[in-house]
Image 1: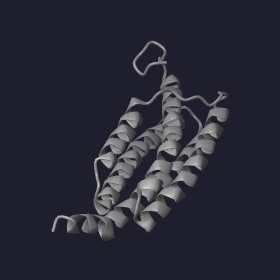
Image 2: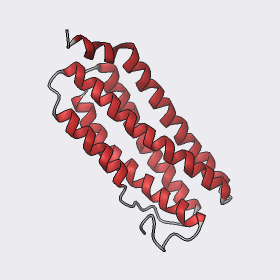
Image 3: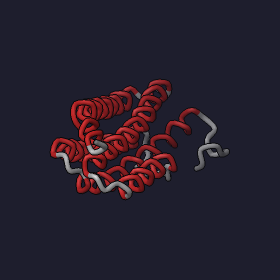
Length: 171
């Protein structure tokens, strides 16, 4: 099912497609996070990535519950957006030798992922409500809260120390 094809005729079709999109995205994120954990040199950043990996695994379980509520088997569809964000993160990280700058770059890349997820989950919550899926709204809202909290933690970490450390390498 392509995003702008005749396969999507109703809001429910669009909702299901976006569920499949974010399901794929979460799976890709679980593959990317271990690499980010390995590259991160700041202990707090590494620990945050480890925590978010566990959260992401739980988010996948919640998405599977949403699929079940819809009477569907969990299935992902390729998400070029998340693939592009992860590809860019890998390319940038591969080009940075300075560990402090690398940590700042990993943080920025992680926030790009979080911002993508925040937009997707916000939309899914609205659509789930519109199609009468109150239980799905609750499950998706739990995930959205986690994504926002992760973004906030990354911002605080970047602003409290990581960006300053990266800037010191220029002196």
